[in-house]
Length: 314
Image 1 (tube, one colour):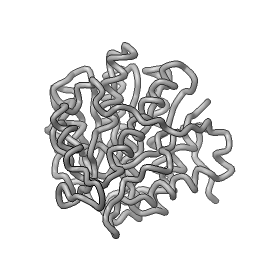
Image 2 (cartoon, one colour):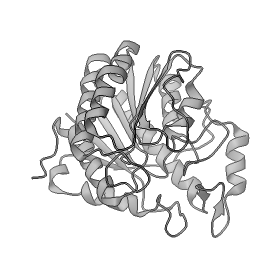
Image 3 (spheres, helix red, strand yellow):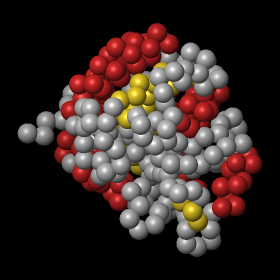
């Protein structure tokens, strides 16, 4: 199978304060591990920036204008307790969104079977009108809308295995039965949403996981609940919010996943995509704040996408 890796350009950089977990070094760790010989067959591209004012029906013009007004000419502006914006932030977001849209184009055209977008900042906490949780723009939501509006896709499934619930993605699509959102996440944990009884119009499936649980509980959640729900939805394309902060090394959460767990869930999602939507997958990086854990998770995720098997690290 052919996989496409789309990376952000080295500049512009979304900057955060010293000691902030969502930092530029995250992408350096991802790029380093994906430069290893095991990934030599990846098709590679650098993302082009796109216009954030796309007619995608996700964020309003007023919301984007507010972000633009908050962006400083120099230094940093704090939006909330966790979320900051710097001079290069919106350009970085535009490049990240460009990566997602290029991945969508390549997958829909049959150039590749799947794509992984190594981008930051993450996006799944950004609600329709509220930036939060390190996130400014919900890129994966825009990719879902563009899939429908430009490519004639009827039904989009988004599966989110970040350790934090994607409240923004749920906020945007919870009243829209043409988009499925399924999430596993630690609870209780930031942002406090994602209870099992949050079901939208029947298109939202949340499976909270207790602190200190690991791969066994995750595999049960997916095998028994999330994967059957996605298959019943029968999507035309599968998008993945790929967060790697459920890794046992991550400092911001308390789940105990290993690299093998990320390989397992990736393989199961690929099998599901093969059965429902011709294998079409676009995966976008979300969280993951321990650099070693992030690199291990990404390596297993991308190796499975590109080789159909877990990376042997023995």
